[in-house]
Structures are given as structure tokens and as C-alpha cells.
Length: 441
Image (cartoon, rainbow, N blue to C red; front, side, top):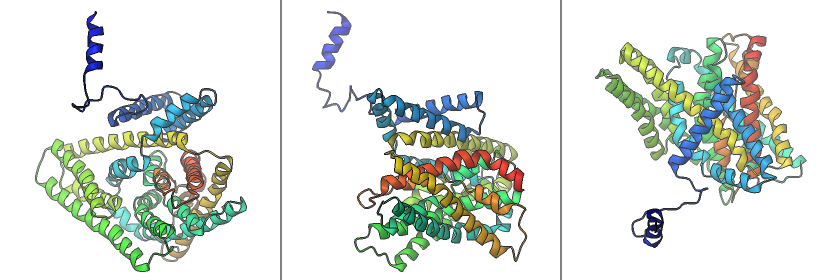
């Protein structure tokens, strides 16, 4: 008997259960490292092809290639069902909500906030504040009401509160999508600050609105007290901002006392990962905490607590983190189509929801500009540029995936509608934003 045969017999006769060692695993069940390796490889391949062929902005390019790849697998699956089944099983192992909201979002938000000028943000604070609060609530009401009538026209009976849930999850502009696109287009600094600042802060309000409506939708009696909503607002939003100030202050204090760029970069990583995790444990808004900490480190920390050498290394490090995670995230968005319950009516409803979402965004922007124009001037083309530049992205998809199927009967339809709006927002609005700016600015 050859050695290889003896080894196989040994493995077959050995009781491995006592050791906790797994020798065989289904090819469709992948470990976390294998999933990360696969995602990075696919992202690198799509990024390379995009750089060689289309030369779109990386985030848009890799998402489009991932989307085409997914559609190709679906078509191939009609001939070879096992192909689509295998691909779907692999993608389904990636919890998109957890991957974005619990892992990637904190790093992406910090990287974005790191380069936002605090003085510019203060000058635009009224616009940003109104758009990130009243604008989100107004948009939620408009989109929710329109969605309820739209679904009713198709003979799909849903509770009004479920339609409002769609309005809440699709209303906030996505900071990841917005920041990734704005870097590639030329826009006046004041407008860039408005759009960037709003996208960084309105997700906190958006999540609070979403949670409040979800609480009503899943409540046995369909009622959530106003005190409960105020409590969520105070704990999530105010608590997140205060906690972010503490994080930023602690980071600044530590950075001022050393001169070692490796350790200083490590400190910023700890602020982001550790601070975000602790904020979530304390049930405050992790995203808002990270944004506030990023603004403090990016302004006071960079100028008063870092040497030129440290700033250069810090900027390069977080730029790479931002680009890599953005690319992986947008590939995931493109691949998520594999796990959608695709339905012709739901896809059509998604297409019809696009003008509804844009109309709600236009209304929110016009209302804000109309109120504040009496007290301050606005840049030429502010309304159309802010309307078209209000991109939706991964956060909307993550919130839609978080909808509990046992309480939300129209979950699959709302998820498909969300996906269609997000794809349009990133691909069409993102690719044409430069032309809109050139025409109206």
C-alpha cells in the first residue's frame, strides 16, 4: 500500500470529532477569511478591468461590473441551475447589513470626515442642519405616501406604516456614495460642503426615524409613545455627538503627547474601531460619534497635534482604507442582486419609485433653500445640483435588508425597490453629476 493510501485510511479511521478539527467542509460553506479573500480578489479584478476599459470612477465601475457579472450568472443559471445556486449561496453568506453597518461604515465615515474643514462646516451649519433633520422627515413623508398609493395602484395591499418605512430608509443621502463621487467631480466649495456635511449627519436622523417607524410597524398595538421616540433621539443622536466629542478629545490628547506616526495612525484606528464598538454597546449613534471624532482629529488634531510627516502618512493610510473599502462595498452592492427575489412587478415599482424619490429630494432642497435664501445667498444652481447630488447607497440597502420578514409582509418588494433606486442613484446620478454641475453651476 502506498503512503498516500495509508494516509487516507488513517484519516478515515481517525475520530476527529474529539479534537474539534473539521477535515471536510461543503464547498459552498466558506470561512470568514475565504469570503474576504474572494471579495478582495473579485474587487481587484473588476477594478483592473474598469481601469483598462471604462475608466469610470472606481466605485461606480466595480459596481457596474459586479452587477453585470450577477446578471450573467442569473442568465447562466437558467441553463445550469447549479451555477446560480452556488453563487447565490456564497453571496448569501455575506451579511450585508452587518458588513456595512457593523464593520465598514465606521472606517468610511471617519475617512470622509477627516478632510472636511470645520470652518466651512460651521458656515453651512443651518443648511446642513435643516436638510439632515427636517429634510429627512419631509422626504420620508412624501416618499412613504407616494409609495402607498403606488403599491395600491398595482393591487398590492400594504399598511401605510410599511410604506413609510421605505420612505425612511431611502430618504437619507449616503455619505459613502456621496463622498466617493464628489472627489471625482468639480463643484464649488460651498456646495461641496453642504452636500458632504448633510450626508455625514443625516444618516443619524434617518436611522432614528427608521427605528421609530419600525417600532410602530412591529408593535402589537401599532403604537409607540412620543416619549419613546424622544428617548431614541436623545440617546442615539445627542448621545452619539457627545460621545464623539469625548473620543475626539481623547485622541487629540494622546496625539499631542507623542511623535511616532506608526503609533499615531494606530491611535486613529483604535478611535474608529474601539469607539464605534463602544458607542453601539452604549446604544448611541456610532456613525455620528465617528463623524464628530473624525472632524476633531481632521481639524484640530492635524494642525495642532501632528507633524508634517505624520499628516502625510495619516492621509495616505486613510485614503487607501477609504478607496479599498469603498470598492469592496460597491462590489457587494452589485452582487446582492443574486439574493433578491426578482419579480417583474417589484422591478417596475422600483423604476417608478425613482422619480418619486427625486421629487421628494427636490421638495426638501427647495424648502430649505426657500427658507434660508431670505437670510443668505446661495450658489448658482444649488437646488438642481443638491437634488441630483443626493445619492443613495449601501446604507439604504442595509436598512432594507434589516426589515423583519415576520412583521413586514411587503419586505421583498420594498427590498427590490430600494435596490433599483440605489443602482440608479449610483450609476446614473453618479456618472452624470459632473454634467449637471457644468450645466447649472
